[in-house]
Amino acid sequence: MEQMKQIDSLSIREKKQYLGVPETWKLRPICCLSDVSEEEIYYAALESGSFVGMASLQKVPSFTLYFLNRRGEEILYFEKRSGLFSSKTEVFDATENLIGSIQKQGSKTAFRALDAGGHGLYDIEADSSDPETFQIRRGGVIAGRISRRPTRIAEEGVSSNNHFGIVFPLEAETAEKGVLLGALFVIDLLF
Image (tube, rainbow, N blue to C red):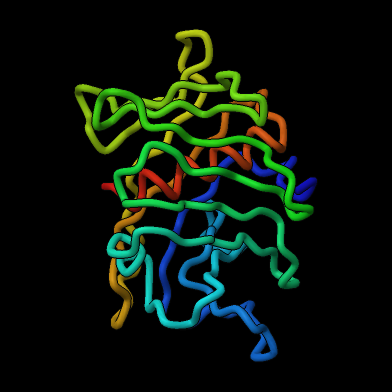
């Protein structure tokens, strides 16, 4: 997870083919996370190979999504164990330690990022003037955002060219970034 220390933003991208993935990988990516230059930095993969893309995750009640670096090493994983509109997604590091969770709040567009002890890290809520932008707040102050980011180049055979990206809070520690990536995936699947 230390690799995430220097990263300030990432965007989810679905592609027909991932350039940095060797044929020897057992897990097949369903999407990648790219930097501002759209270079593939990380990959998200499911253990089961039966899913075609991110859209298929909206239909299943539970899943484990693995977050891998370019060498195929697991960095994080996210566990969703009930319906799409369940209240909680847990985030674990590569050593299977819980680092936090994302909990849906009362509003359809409000979430809370919690640390491993269940203490609030960030509040995440859609901006009333722009429902495609979710403000990440700490102590009521805007610290980052999750927003819809269409790809620059549409790719045939891809289920969606319109996913979300995140700008991390400047002071976020690597574990907090991991939890916020959980929020990014939850929001991308719901909206």
